Image (cartoon, rainbow, N blue to C red):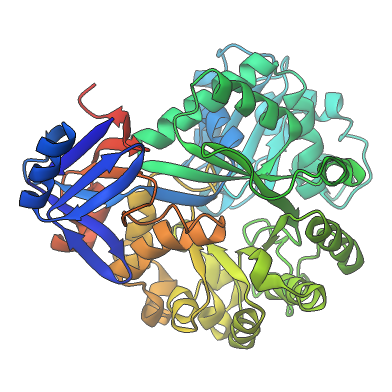
Length: 526
């Protein structure tokens, strides 16, 4: 199929900023960028189909380098608790939607920092609404949740002796669970889902991503069942975007050992579905105070968070992954966790060759930025955290404000940086993320902006990191991320040129059409 786009404006790349009048696609790749007259000659020569853009704008497709694709699918069909302002409102929303089918009642998105009651919700709050079915409501960060008593019982968490099962003054489990305890609950819930359930959920997620102009995702923390489900969707022709997998190491490293034994190295797969590497966790989240800091939390002086695994265990995983020819992506939010990851990477060697990643890097010191640059580490960041974590100064204090989400410092240091959403932790809509990166919460009353306005990211750098930067993080920059001749033709048509509007308007940009390999995967007119 040959397709020529004319009568519009095509952004070929953002760094450098290059545009053309027209674009021609054949065999799924870009074969021409240039003048409209040149494109029309190719239309006549190659018998191309011609698409009149009617003055609209074409951009490279967004590449979200860090998404929990299974979580996106799940949360499209669960209770949305974002913006809930009290425990009473949370209970009302739970009650209104608890009749949905399924053995569990699941929701996501609450943040206790908003609650008028000034406390975390408990299992007893949820029991007042639903007591006969297990309920799991995850916090917006995805690192904590509140379960009702039924869920606590069937998961065994009610009697589990763990610091991640929170207890009250009487020693009673409150229903709030974090980190590894939450993973137990999630695993129990996933056991109730069939392969067909997961396939349908993932299909919904990729269709939703396509509707937002996302053409490729890095699916992190994927398990073997998700890989199987995606493989079936691919064989059925229902995988509408490109998916790059970062698998959990598995229990006792079983998944990683299997990949190594089978020789399934980075890049195994095809243009739509590939294995990239392994995802590991070094710490938790700022919201749950499980991110590991070198100095205590400003609002909890006796608490500095903690590592999710030992440095020795992380190094074992890293070595085995690299020996297997796999890329490593390590979640590290606090500066102490980042220190540990950088130490492991420095001993590992060849970091720049494998493009090993640090996910989030939320609290990163200037000396760590220098070391990351020297090692060749890729940083994968989530600008929407700036708006969601509006309370972050309360957590870390003003003295550490300059270390929090320093996007422009990272770019200025020359570190490869990719932009992502961590969805469903943050909205999957790229324009919300672009707005957050460029505005840095200026129009949302975010204190971090007023203390660090210099870290706002220019639009061209934001869009570069969200396309070519993310392609680099995935090891795909040779054929994705720009619309240069020879690259895969993944692009979107939008209703306005983002470079010709005010910052406040960025979040209102609408995706009209999405194309993957020159094939339309979404149209707003459908």
